[in-house]
Length: 294
Image 1 (cartoon, one colour):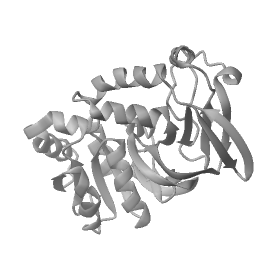
Image 2: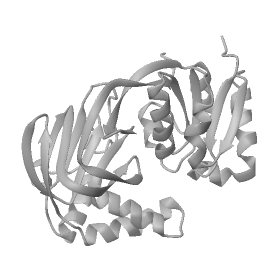
Image 3: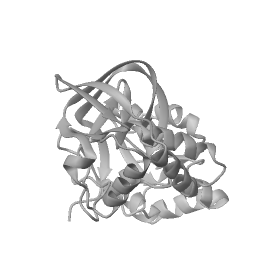
């Protein structure tokens, strides 16, 4: 049975959406027409995503964009106990991949219209929701460097990554991980919404979004050449857990005790947050439309 009307809210500035240009609206309408689901389509600027979603009271809203857009939408929908339909129209679409979407608009429209709504975990950095991960250090610097370049995001990522890897900045962090104090020196503190795989062929993937935990990784302190070699080992699935990480564990809560304002990357978007900062997992905190069970 179809819903009466499904609101579809798309960030027209996102990677794939922007590349589709004037054909975007027609492509979205065609994808949903094939499902038989009537829609109310909104193509909006990134800054208007939350307000557009809040203006609707529909129990399910389909949202198109990258991971940052989806996280913004999820913050609204989680607070209102509504369900998120995912249209992977960003550049990398990590979250869509981890919930079983193969990257095609047609499949995503079918799931948004006829999948099933189920709870998954989300993370929080202070009051800010994240779907994938939060990080301090070189990743946030890389995102800032990438976004300053007048290049497509995918093309700007390589020189930005090389720059921060070759000239890393180590941070001294005082952490409380589930109440236990931990002091680390690291160029990168990475906190995932559930654990990320380090196995070859599965790097950057999550087997589960319902384990109710944060995956915490602090990269070991080393110079630029050492970080580049470690990154190459990771891509080959040859990580040495003891040598390459200052910490790797699971937790429900991590508090970064360093004071002041610091740049934090949340789902590929850099924001400035006040410290001390609490990272936590909210088990089942968001409802998402998932592919129908076989």
